Length: 348
Image (cartoon, rainbow, N blue to C red):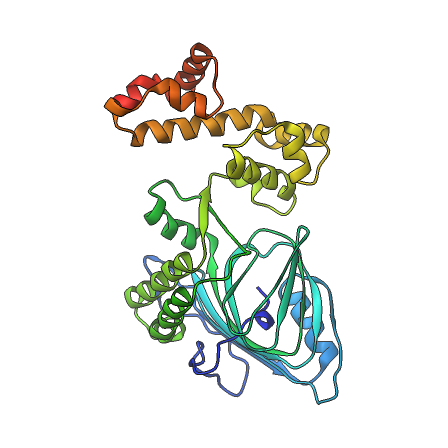
């Protein structure tokens, strides 16, 4: 993710621990049984056009544009970490704008100086001072930024999702954050404390694998505490740039399953015509929007029955709450999906 979005607030140590005077790209150390992916990279310069071109290429962006200002231009960039988690700090002394088609990772950023505005699917967000903010993980977005000094914590999707499973108790699933929320002051303080206590172990090449992992877990858990989120069971095949609109439809269904929904509502929310949505969901998921919505609602009934007290709950009440008025048809669909009848789930 673009380093020029992010920075440490005043008073916080540089998360990357300082840099050498020349570009560095290192690998080494162990990683809980897997080959190490540790790396430390530094870059910088004074050529605005070259800096813009290199950033666009490095981050697989498009239409990056920067404007020269009244002072000499400089940029610097340093990152350190591995495939699970990277800390990054940078500065870019000119306004810039551009587009990122598919970041593919979870990113928390904060500015020490400057301001960042993100545009995503009709929504606009502008950073406030040094308050941490999220960048879209699997969404195309455009950005505008003033001259800035910034830092970020970039977490690999698999690592954050496995960590989130500690909280929701289910299998590893896509984590959908609420990007519009400004984190509470106490949450920001806890986040900064986590960065301060973990950064050295994350960025040092000589850190032992166990110590590095514990530091990475501290930051991943702090990220989950910083912003509201929910786990969404999105098929792996939809987690691509090409399938973004179908993924939007699936996530909309999960978020609004308790509300009255029609295929037209889902199509409008995901930016498609109803027929296009029908065709796309059939192609990617082998089902229709209405059938997928029923599956999600069956899953919600199943979850409620598992958590309910048998002597205080009626299956029919839970079924009606999730839109199943024909109890016989509901029981048959439930048994086909879960290989047991709803009364048996409630009795467990």
